[in-house]
Every structure is written in structure tokens, then in C-alpha cells.
Length: 289
Ligand SMILES: Cc1cc2nc3c(=O)[nH]c(=O)nc-3n(C[C@H](O)[C@H](O)[C@H](O)COP(=O)(O)OP(=O)(O)OC[C@H]3O[C@@H](n4cnc5c(N)ncnc54)[C@H](O)[C@@H]3O)c2cc1C
Image 1: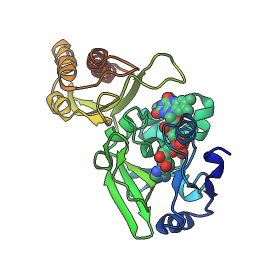
Image 2 (image 1 turned 90 degrees about the vertical axis):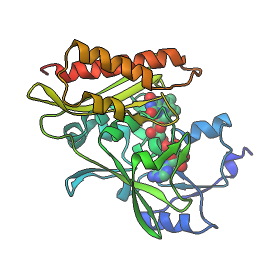
Image 3 (image 1 turned 180 degrees about the vertical axis):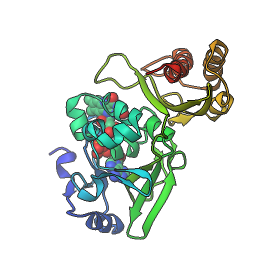
């Protein structure tokens, strides 16, 4: 019998039941949603098969996409397939819908979830950059109550989250894209589908009276977590998008990011392409469409 065959599976019917399982050390277990990260990690031996799994797939409390108090609220159990086709997401956070459409292939998008993507705490999460430019807040629940944590404070490092053993991510709250603003997503991998990113990023920006009035940019796979680039954002505010701005933003970005080399890419390529990505975002912002 394999180690995984000995794993106990608990399937709560409600969020409350899931939280009660997590609260009790006799029923606490590893959260499993789409399983597209976990099943691969267990099979490959990257993580040992756990003694107990709590299957939260299909909990209705985690599956909603809605507007609430002016925020776009996305349940942690929402799949990439649901994200890419949601008219609310396309309207309020278009780069997130674009990012979801590039995750894996159709099978992975049908099962994989936004909560699992952030729960995995990988710098290669294609969800993280678009959540960061939308100032996303993670809502966490336990039997002790609710906590809301801004994403940069929630993802603490490589495979490290500010998540207690009895907590789970319930939903994300995003600031909707302001009227007249634009967003874009770009991912560089070895091929168009079924590829983990070498570098990827999202931006949200706006030009008013010929000058940049809003620019938020986040890159993934260039640091232990996906990162916003506040120095670049501040440098760009008030500038026109001309040749000097494009060149300056590209160079500054390449100078600021400190990626590592790994099996997917060299550090030099990641630095260079980060600058090109930000330049491309500015060209997109300046374009009429
Ligand atoms: C072939 C293949 C291709 C892939 N391609 C991509 C890609 O292009 N881009 C990309 O970003 N990813 C990719 N992935 C990775 C994966 O599909 C995504 O990260 C997916 O979103 C994970 O979601 P899940 O629901 O399947 O997570 P699971 O595997 O169920 O869980 C992942 C982690 O999150 C935790 N977790 C899950 N839900 C919660 C919650 N509500 N609260 C707290 N913790 C939680 C789990 O305990 C676990 O640690 C790929 C995977 C495969 C197998």
C-alpha cells in the first residue's frame, strides 16, 4: 500500500464544518482543493503524503464571484476556468482573467483554483501579480473568527504564508480597475501552454491629460514572492509616455529586480526581460486600444 493510500480523507459539507475539522487536532489535515499542485507534489515525493486531507473542493461558500462594498470578491475555490470566463472579473480585473487563461491547459484550469495558487506560495503563481496590482486582501477564516490581510503581508516568502494551522483562505477582495484605466498580463515561458513561467507580470495604469496618473506593476518569478515595484511606480507618476520614459523604466526595472537562476531561466535573462515587460506595459498603456 502506498503512503497516499493510507491518507484519511475528510470531506466537509460546509465551511463551518471545514473550520471545525481544522480547529481540532484530531481532525486537522492538509487542505486539498483542486489538487493540481498537491497531487503532483505527493506523487513526485516533493512533499510526503499527509496523514489526513480535508477536501474543500466544491464548498459553495468558497465558489462565489461578486461585488461587495465596492470590492470585487472572489472565493478561494473559484477555478481558473471560472475566472477567465467571469464577466465581472473581465470588467473589474481583466489582467486576472487573462492570467487565468494562461494557467496550464484546459484540464488544469477546470480543477485548479485561485486559493490553491496562493496557498501553494510559489513565486511562479500566475495569479499573484494580477492580485497584487488590484491591491488584493486575503480573507482568512477559523473558528476564532475572520482576519483580512493584504496580499504582500500574507505571502511571506517562498512557500511561507501568514496562515495559522486552523485557518483557511475564504476569499480575496480586490479593488476594481478605475474608470478609464487599463490592465495587461504577460507571461514568458518555454511554450504557450502547460508551462511554468520564467517571468510574468501584470500592470494597472491610467493616463490623464497626457501624463501617467496611475501605475501599479507586479512581476512574478523574479524574487521569492511575486513583487510590486514601488520605485518604478513612483518614478512613472506624472510622466508622459515618451522614448525617455520607456528607456528609463526599462533600465530601472532591470537594475532593481534581483532574480535567481534556476532550471527555468538564467538570472540575466530574467533581469533583462523584466525591463522589457515593463516597457511593453507602458507601450500598451499609451496605445489607443
Ligand atoms: C500540468 C500543470 C500545469 C500547471 N500550470 C500552471 C501555470 O501555468 N501557472 C500556474 O500558476 N500554476 C500552474 N500549475 C500549478 C497549479 O495548477 C495551480 O497553482 C493551481 O491554481 C493550484 O490550485 P489547486 O486548487 O489545484 O491547489 P491544491 O493542489 O489543492 O492546493 C495547493 C496548496 O494550496 C493549499 N490550499 C488550497 N486551497 C486553500 C485554501 N482555501 N486556503 C488555504 N490553503 C489552501 C493546499 O493546502 C496546498 O498547500 C500547474 C500544475 C500542473 C499539474
